[in-house]
Length: 289
Image (cartoon, rainbow, N blue to C red; front, side, top):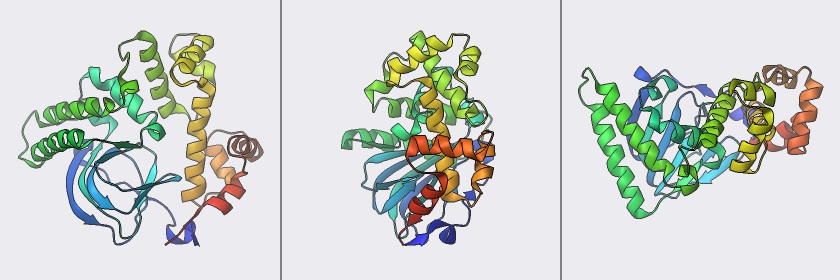
């Protein structure tokens, strides 16, 4: 076992993608050496078959095939050495997503703003075949000649894929048009963009034009957790990434997440993980090669 700092000094920064959209077909794609990447663009991996492991933040997933992986902005991932997989890799940024019809917004919010619950989605053979057809059509459209409204056409296909992905889990698609559900999705979207600077529940409630009590009721109805827990889970996830995949001092991580002192951050981190930041970095930031 080697400390991760000696293997990956720093996650690679994802290169800018033209028009914030891309899709590629992978045929028995072999990973000779792991390359750690911090996600700038949302990502959907449609994997038909393969073997090996994909590491996402602090979790490992064995590649089994007939499955979908969702990777959200800010997450860190890499494929284990000698992994092989076939399928499609679809990437899109927020500015491209704005081209999709508004009716698909709830799907993206629920799927990607609660990314840890939707990281790996298995499919039946029939479902996977349907996804393969959609991805192949989108890939051919993307690979063809450019024309004036091509981004709009690509966005339309992406909308269909997102809706179909949401349908894999019925609980994700129930009451999408319900007003409370819309507020909940808006809250998730705000948290995903502001959690590093905004920790106060009342600040989010004010942006949504509702009371903090109403926001708490909505969150507990949807997840059984309060809004503060949702905000703190985002903070903990980002803190773990910083401890695992960077060599930043704990004090710098604390200030980056808008904690007043390193001690305040350490107390917060230990409350949710039972480990101090330094213990977590020492005990958990290791992988086998």
